[in-house]
Length: 182
Image 1 (cartoon, one colour):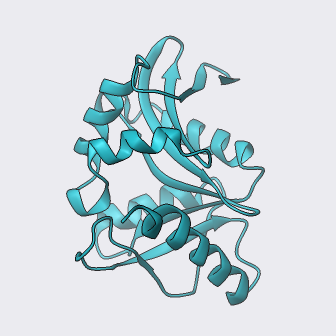
Image 2 (cartoon, helix red, strand yellow):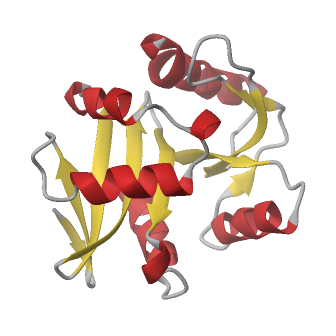
């Protein structure tokens, strides 16, 4: 566990972890079908050494989860959600700051393009702790074969130095997180 104030990260290593049921329920509630794997596929990734499923707890209560991948020189935050009952309590901001520190200030994530108020608020949420919107075009690979690629925006802390670095990180995300599991 990583401790900082009352927020703890507890790595889920197997399906017997006490937070698994909460994580699976929140995963399906927080992310539409095209934004996630099946629950079975997700649980199979617990054996993947470069993926960390982190149960987020406030004191002794599980309040959310994060899925983080170790890449070469970066960490990729694939999914992050706080349970609805615990939103608007500043937990999300505290967790993001801890994740940035955990990733040694080299964290990248995907967000929807700013097409509506919710997407714009989400981008603003990630900008506050220091994420920068990448100016380079990005599309999220599909989770299932035959589905469409989704236009998204990559955000990172720090900003990508140039398009070459951006393309190298994108290639890792595509090959290590998405395509490897089709």
